[in-house]
Length: 287
Image 1 (spheres, helix red, strand yellow):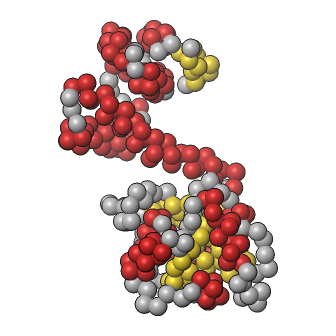
Image 2: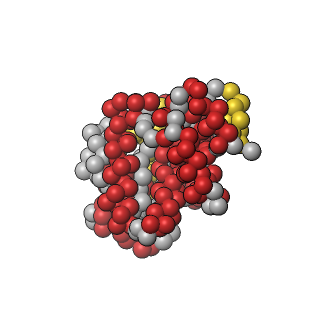
Image 3: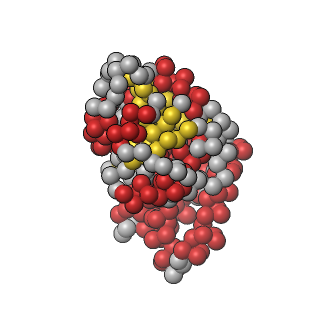
């Protein structure tokens, strides 16, 4: 089975690198020639075909362009499809369904969303498994299992209506975590700390917390003033950051999720300090 890569960015190149020793990646294409040259070198492709020949010869096409360009890339490729040849078309967008590809004769479509981060052209360190969330045609699902069936991947089906929530969960777990840490870095500047202290002091604390969650679950991984009901400490925190609207908003909103773990007789007081009103169990609105 011959595979062609359309779009040589971080995601497509990293995934192809992981499977290159088990499958036949016959060539790559990217409108940015420097990206294409880099992919040819990394994937060790001896003779890269022209775009036309890449489309004609490939049984499987990976479209790993930016989301807004996936359909355009497909339209450029489909004019070279042979109606007598079965083709499997995959994209790797977390938000778009497989049906972004128009339905066609002998064309099977799949969306494969890798639940991992690819900030650079490197393989994510210390990842034993990468989850690929699949949505699309059953035949494409079977082929995806053959292509990514090695030790690096776990393929999990997902419903089309759940894709957006899955992608957004990843944004909260990764992108917005970077935003949170950026906010923490701004807070540490009050002590004249820099990125060195962030790496040596703050990040190990975060890693320890994640490990505690992994081992003990959310409730028993929690420590700090809210779970202890330390009202005066919370007041002091608010006093320190009340003039920084963004830091105060982060503190209020994230703390509201922790009120459930506070001593019952302290919860109303904590809600007032956070300027929160209870809507329903575990949900709050803010003044």
